[in-house]
Figure 1: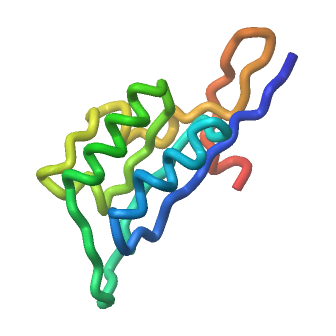
Figure 2: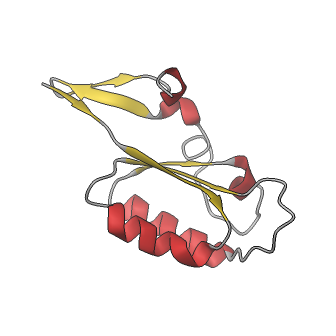
Figure 3: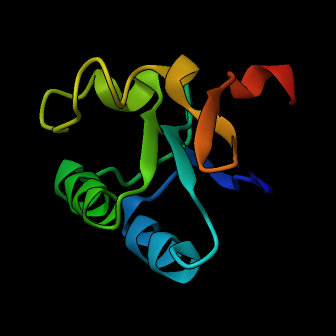
Length: 109
């Protein structure tokens, strides 16, 4: 049986205070999370690394797949898992017969 994985792209993010709520509202339905800030913005933003780290802890505890965009990885206070949460190519497209086929999401976007 083939099942399609779901993902949400939380970007561009202007305010990290919304991150926890978005994640809690979607945990039941979403398999993978792509998270990033507004790149090169000139708008006023509210970015608190501790809120990002809390969100990452929730996702990890729930066994969700995570991809952090460069805009978050460059913040020294953000605790991401190098080689895993910074590797877009490891996100999975679907499960079939209990197995997993690795395919980058870029092929379907």
